[in-house]
Length: 254
Image (cartoon, rainbow, N blue to C red; front, side):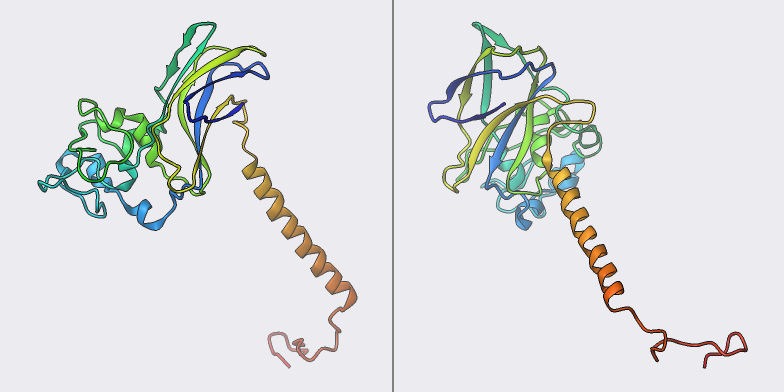
């Protein structure tokens, strides 16, 4: 079930098919190039992992230090542009709880973001104000919205996990959604969408891998057919001088 944003921030939608928990909530951004070279490099992995490296701000300009020359933690454009729209769901005048735990990769939480590293001077009110703010009392390893956002996407249209609804939705259920529309995609011609989806034992619905396999397989098949036709139509003659013939004595080329 895909929903498009309205500027008033609220909408209601009917569930088309039964959706079994957990129901994953994704935000989708279009025309957003997280794969830009300067953007991808605008972070410092040492700072994200170690408390002792709090002053490490290499590659993070212009979001490296405050006007007072204090280091920003986490620094860089990726963290600075953190997505900050919020969603609230209700059905039959009852709120649907959104679980925001365990939405990030365990490998990222365990090996890239330190449990003793806390945000500092982040979105501190300077000239450049980006996206969401971070709670300075929570370590980076527990700031899962940030961890999800900082795994940069390879394509300009991408989805990132916002949270999970832990209850089933039946067909024709009416869901009311309140959207706090904070993230400014209008200046660069981007679009925002929210997607509710479920998964099966083979994963979620994503046609990209299947299309890629079909495309590569089709090219390989055409190449194979072309080589076979070339061999049949114009075979290489046995008397071709480019062939090397063997003398009676093995190991001696004629």
